[in-house]
Image (cartoon, rainbow, N blue to C red; front, side, top):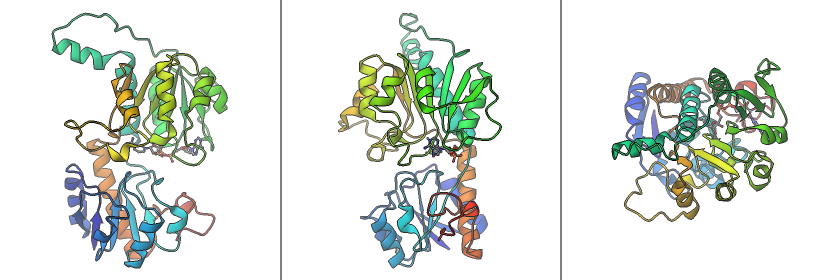
Length: 344
Ligand code: NAI
């Protein structure tokens, strides 16, 4: 079985080559992203394997269908880059629902600690033998309130980590998890109350119509002065211009972003010798209280192994049986839980 692997990076190949060799899947790696201009590269393959910044819109779906390609194997959890409604009846969309919630949750806490204890500043200062502590004052996490939006796999691991720090958790989820609210250190609340009472807000929900720009001018206005915003989920959950204004006005005390709305143009690539065209991103990065990582929260050995094994298993299982629990229903749920009968 031959799969066209788009947006391939050097760190993808060892784990995919290994799982592919074990299960008889041959991956052909393309560095380019999948989109309307590059979809022809998939000609002659049995399926495509894509990541977060590949584009699987209606035209790409139609072209894949015309070429007789029935499998789109996402090597990630999120699927906001796939036109699921259009894919129905044309291509089967498989994903990796969980590969390491710990990788993303731990990276979120790493960003938070780095930011509020000024580790990014200290690292640069001490390398220059500057041992001054001026401007390095942080704050304790203990007893602070963290608002967690999205209490799925990653959100719940992040909540556990925060509880280890003695923090209080206010949670919001469209579909609250049973047994998580203990009426004390973890409480579900309304989105407005979460905005009003949280010292730190961390986003762990998917990008949907409901959650697009969930952090914007209006929601920031409801927040405490000095609120810390963490986004390791999807860039468009945050209106970056509103965030920048919030930072300039001192309403936002700090921001840690592993994702950015326009990241597809920049992230995963070396622009160090270029002039960055995106003024908002450049201004955000220039701020002393903003930390940006380029969608690296998932990047651990464990996650890469799990991603490769699950993706390859999905492809093999679907090809053999025509079924796979990790196939997405056109509404975005899993095929196993599909109540609409419209997975494919
Ligand atoms: P999950 O599906 O286990 O949890 C998502 C949670 O969000 C669910 O509890 C769901 O009910 C909730 N939700 C759905 N709509 C909502 C709404 N309108 N408001 C509030 N909550 C809502 O997903 P998981 O594995 O926890 O991943 C969360 C997100 O993390 C993914 O959607 C993806 O965007 C992002 N992610 C980022 C990575 C990175 O490297 N930065 C890697 C993996 C995932």
